[in-house]
Image 1 (cartoon, rainbow, N blue to C red):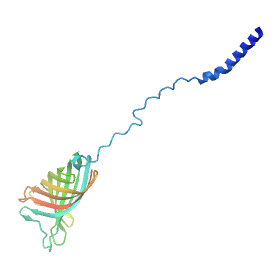
Image 2: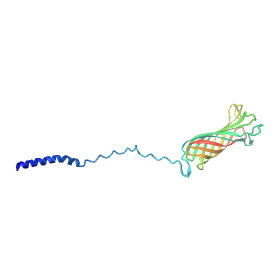
Image 3: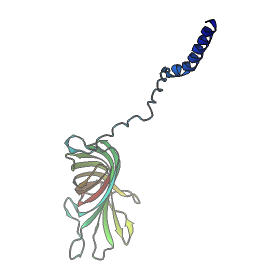
Image 4: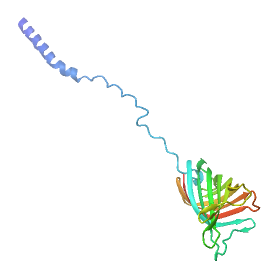
Length: 229
């Protein structure tokens, strides 16, 4: 009986040693560590872009404003037109304008404006009468396409004969250009309109006044401009 008991005890111990590893392996392990916190600068959704349009249909224009254009029209003194001598048909005046500046807000721009007009005044097409204006100007959009512009600055007068400038007699000392004050107004409508680009049709009127000349020199043109914002 004692020998049987020792054998039985040994068999039981061997059985436990065989069964123990699977039982331990079956027990659940410790939970995995939590993931590291996400980097706030990586994978975050981008900030929403500003809307391209504002209430009322106005474009979200900002920063640089630049453009140029051409027009045709006429030049005159207060007392009468500036006409081509001996011409069968009076030639039109030709105008060129350029502006650069910035948007103060989506509806208003502050600009430096250059506007020059010239007209042929002889039959042979060798003599031209010209006026150039350099001004500070404000442009304001009444609607997304319709705008008004006004400017103040300086103006100069000149004659060109056979491609060479000739001084204009206006009371200035010899060798100095004929200069005076300038005022300009314009109205335009954007026939092609977007946030960064526009083509507009515009009507311009300007007047230069000079010491020594009793009449003011006026110019009016109608033309088209290309504009970038």
